[in-house]
Image 1 (tube, rainbow, N blue to C red):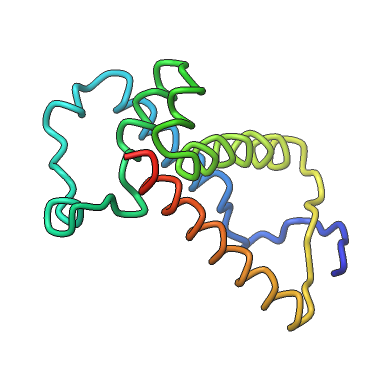
Image 2 (spheres, rainbow, N blue to C red):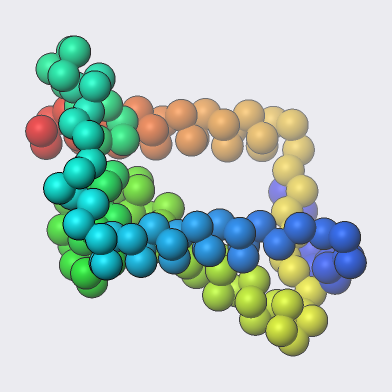
Length: 135
């Protein structure tokens, strides 16, 4: 793994602002709209009887929007972690753009990429196992 600082080029897309903006819209909807009352039931759970890997995501967003982080983690830990990470990424991107700061870039070797892919798969499976046990 190689880490280095790199200045943003003029045609580079600001993914932190995009992802963070989406997260903020989700939080705004969770705070201001009664989304739990019109959110559909999980089709996967209805057919199989077990929760899907995303079950509890809507409730998790609503809990985060109301400031109840612990309940959000109980509903769906991975969604909560991704939502909070997107907000931190949003803030870091805004600061970087506002002050024209260089970004930390990561270059992974092929073997490291495979380890990362396997790690993500394991996290998703652990998330699903948690939801199956919890619900």
